[in-house]
Amino acid sequence: MSVATDNGIYVSDKAREKVSKLMDDAGVTGDSSYFLRVGVVGGGCSGLSYKLDFDNEMKPTDQVFEDNGVKVVTDLKSFLYLVNTTLDFSDGLNGKGFYFSNPNASRTCGCGESFSV
Image 1 (cartoon, rainbow, N blue to C red):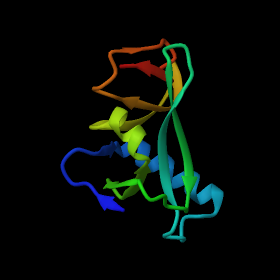
Image 2 (cartoon, rainbow, N blue to C red):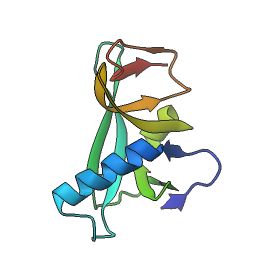
Image 3 (cartoon, one colour):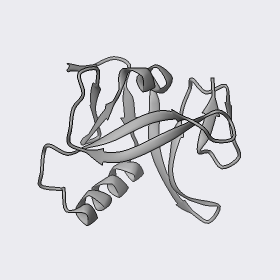
Image 4 (cartoon, helix red, strand yellow):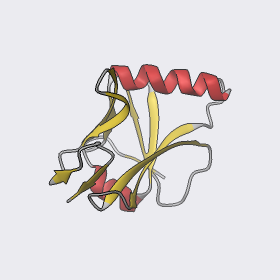
């Protein structure tokens, strides 16, 4: 397990608040073994989609980041697509949910849930 310090995955204040609430709802807030797993999977209208979940099992090639009080873990393959990406949250009228500000994406779809490089 390596903890990266320069290039990473970042978490906005709004996303941190929502992650914290969801961890409370899931009953895993007090359990330090749980973290936010972020991944990239094939699919979506632009070719690649983001995946978010709570997890408590580390894998040998996982990359670990801590930003804004949130422990974020991703597999090495996904990290290649997620370097310097910021996880954000919008609760506005024209979209509610998590979204990624990904500087590596050359194109994103209209719903913001998939991208291509």
